[in-house]
Image 1 (cartoon, helix red, strand yellow):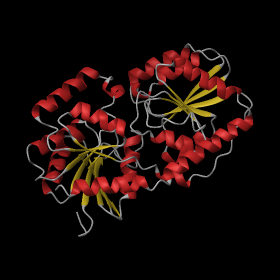
Image 2 (image 1 turned 90 degrees about the vertical axis):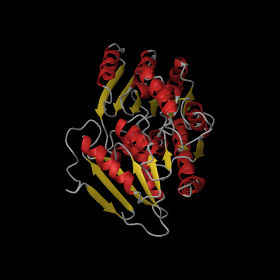
Image 3 (image 1 turned 30 degrees about the vertical axis):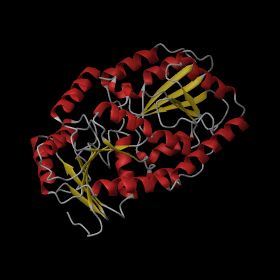
Image 4 (image 1 turned 60 degrees about the vertical axis):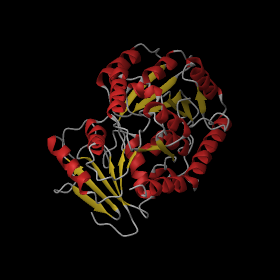
Length: 392
């Protein structure tokens, strides 16, 4: 890989990347980092040659599985043992200043490079790990036995030894310290927003006549808690159009969700819209009165920021960094244990006059723009990567 004297190279491993979109936030997180810090680092992203759940590879990637654009190089790797050998070659070459990992539990994209690092295969290059919420109580509660056994074995064999950690907030920092132990080196730097947030045009308010229009936009998996959202809706006493947008990430869980949908009262209408291309997200969100996402946990939650930017007030759990939406008048934050609290939020929104809904939509968009324009986000991320690179 070509490298300018003043631009250290970052080798980022991420299970899925553009043009993929079905795995959600991690793609947007790495894409935003590479875009925002592209003037300071050369980014090389190694990833799968197909989107999550797809059998066929991307039709648009070059024959040599390599795409170069500006200061960004993307390596698309085919599945199988060849992918492991290719990753080992990349890591051994050492023509990068920092290895950046984004999935702790992936055998290929997390465990394998950490194992090679433990063996000294990386020639002393620093490794920065972004757990992406995988250490949160909500995430560890899913397939918990397997994950907790892995964490215990990882500590026992010293898999965490010498690593640096990237937390996107102080809550995630505490989770890392609890799981890793031995006073890990943790840098806290918030997420960059998705590229479409700032460019989005101001939305017009959907009609206030007819049923309350609510959307759930996320991967359909236990972590995102769609079954909980349906339980909330089962107890409301007014008409609701509830649309589910996102790919099915867990087929057995989706079967459970469909059974819950079948028992909803007649005044609750449900549609599954399927997965959305990134360019479709803003206009879809702007067409709803609110987004309902009682997630078990998010280290950031790109869709929450996108919902705010679209003027679609989020109704979310208290397991995200977006803690102040209620007091800012641009959404609702409800304790996950308080199912009736979610129903009250929907009831309050349904009873709200058009003028009140318009004020809330404007407040949501203003909140999003304040986050997007915060210069501290870039400052903290630059500081993180520069300091970790200097450890090499």
